[in-house]
Length: 191
Ligand code: FE
Image (cartoon, rainbow, N blue to C red; front, side, top):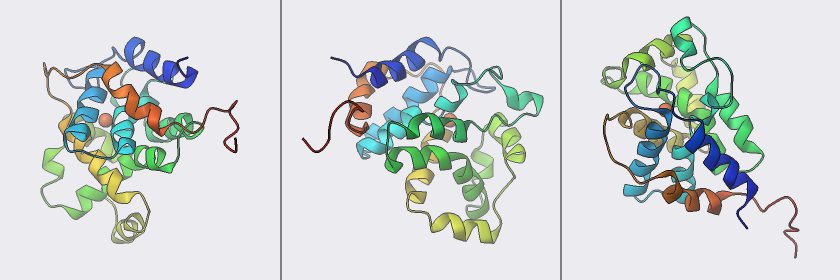
């Protein structure tokens, strides 16, 4: 039997992800698939492939419209995504998702050429999100257990905006997600 949680995730990505990704020419689904595919091709752990696929799911679970940043609203999608996923996954999946916006602010503070790699909407949302990190924020970020996974996810995020790129479908990536799910609530892990 398919895990209901997996089905819910598959439904979000297949039925609810046709909206455009920010100001780009690709859909939320294409962006998710391109992110996960980058992680898969680099042989990243299952958790980072799953996190890459799911990192923007917070955009799909609110009613603020497709591009609230355009109206000057930060939809806090990293927090929404984290809260949605934290019931089902451990920190190896949820922390890179929660931190992927902070990782943009981190990279803009620590790599001189990073700002130039941002898309137009990422630049716009950066100011809503607090701009590049201060030195103290960089040090605090470095100390977090999942900071390097979050930075890696962020790099995929930046690259996963290619128009007309063919990727494997959602179903191809679901096994990675399935392997990261916590034991189903109705199973006793002690048995
Ligand atoms: Fe993204």
